[in-house]
Image (cartoon, rainbow, N blue to C red; front, side, top):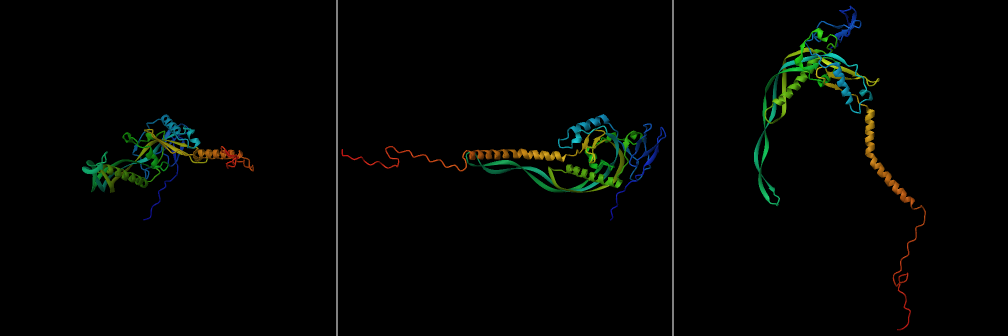
Length: 357
């Protein structure tokens, strides 16, 4: 079976007439909102729905103000380590923007067949021999815990809901997950007035791509639920097969504060995302490899410093010992042997002087 290439949406802009002053506005294909440069009136583009760009169902409103988001970003930047790029901590936060990002809310009915080895603990008393403090062999008892394993298989049915996946190519799904969860209890039906005055993006991912992301998250969630559902004290070898039915995919807009920081003119900017409801923040500040290399070099110098100092000290002592004895000087004569009492310097006894008593 030949795999179909991903669908690319047309990039043709839309001409929109401002309802306040009548100016003709150019709205890009991936944007749903515009602000008139002449009268500052916001407008919302209502395009005809299509398979991969359906009408939005729900909207989650902003509850975190721009000032709060800026404060959160400033605090986050201040906590970055010494090893980030120098321009990161001094970056301006005035360019932060509130964006309604398209996402899909997925739900499905899941039928799962599973099998696993269940472990159940029990205790029993056993007798053992040991040596006491006096060296005598004694018999004692103790209570030990053992595990009995048995095979278990069955079926599990559940309704998977509240699986949120991104529908924008500009925001990877992993980055959206990093600032979740959103309070879905505050969802309200979509109306163009909710997006008025805000930046809002059209979906740029196909529904097939979003279905694949949502199914993967749903299966991961089912696996976690099954692991918690298993009876007994422990389990291993859990295997399961899931069939998803009655799938629904509803388009909604989630609030994000977005800040793109250009830390180096030669490199692309990195992005910081803030949950527009909870203030949760996510970003990956680029590291400075020059700082990392200097830190590694400093650590190596600190490790090698004691050995270098010891070698220099030993060399200095050796040089001082050589200077005390000039090269080529004659060896000092050995000290004369002290004569023994009553003896000659040669050590022999003196001859008698003669004469009879």
